[in-house]
Image (cartoon, rainbow, N blue to C red; front, side, top):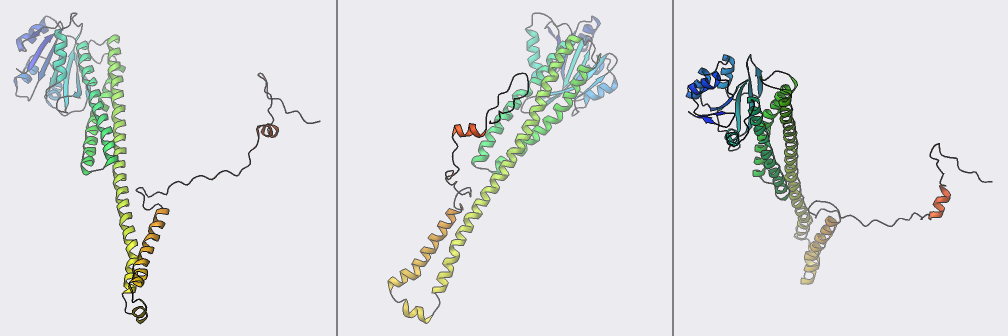
Length: 365
């Protein structure tokens, strides 16, 4: 059977129906962790036969893909919580918490369950209530979001640097993929935050809940608020990175179009000159008959036009990579300087008393 039965003093037993019924009859608190892959599995049969759960709760336990929620029944509470799993997947955990037992059901491998079992095996003081196990379980699930978000932060910084250097289509695909991941994470974190807000604000939602345990669950709620704020911040950062990518691509396209326009503008007068001198006018045929005349009129005019255009383009900043004109040296101010004594004479200092309004300036005799 794919499951683990652990008592709150750290002992692990065989997860069978007989062992569960024995523990329930002796009122010994325990934790049962099951990996259920379907309703026709032995794990779900143990969940259905060894406990007197409500049919609606069993139906919810067999249905995965739900949103985080909290349902209160007569003698137990049913919770749906999420946390990071393996291979960048979210793991959905269904929890049955009663006065003397905690049952967790999940379909995918859950690293939190393995880590909590190792911790329970090394404790020296047994836990007093299944609510404590539930707190440790959900606290480890929620804390697992922070390393995932830290990785997101590093990826966003790296992606922004790459976009500023050379934007590519691959970066655009990564941006959309990361935005989809954050949207999925937000759909889980936001209702999970509301779930724990309800849990810490209402009494007797979970059997065995005490004011002391509520303080611990309030800490989990605080962590979820931080996670929710981080998710929203990273969504804004990804939107800004996407805008930067599109702006950078547009700016580079504008630079290319500007360069092509400059080349076409340079060749426009050259084409006119070559076409003009290529006409068979009698005056040109009779006057431009030597090599110096050819270099002066034929080639020299084209060189002069090209140099004049380049100088004009440079002065206007069209040849720079960003299309801006270099900043001119500011001219010296021609405003006359006012000496310190003259400034004091024009603006006399008025003494201000501590307890009353400022005294008026003394009038000249």
